Image 1: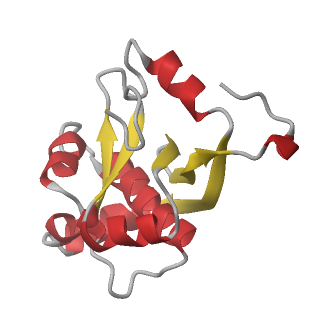
Image 2: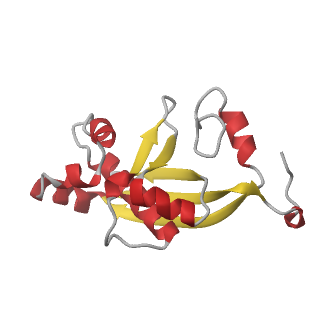
Length: 160
């Protein structure tokens, strides 16, 4: 189940999941752009970096291709986008508390634990939307934190 209820994105019930998000109030938005070559260099110079920043599941997914830098970079961008959305920096943050998950269809989603989950709950975030994109040189992530409640009718958006 997706945080806040409903089916996971990218599943057979994905359309119902998406429909349940229509009219949801956006609490916060974050975006980040990562340089793939820079992250490739960090991974080569500091082998412990991946274990400190990425969960075991993320590392297992990222290490499949011969050059995992693109997959790592887009996940790093997603983690930074979440921190920006929550209005906090890397200081005091445990990046493994922000995990990028991947549905069998390839659709990304987020799972927050620990301090990251508490910060999100304190900001009123019940669930997340995430979009990831990368090339051989750049990785981009955009996240939106959604409230549990619906938008007020004054917004004029359809309610589901």
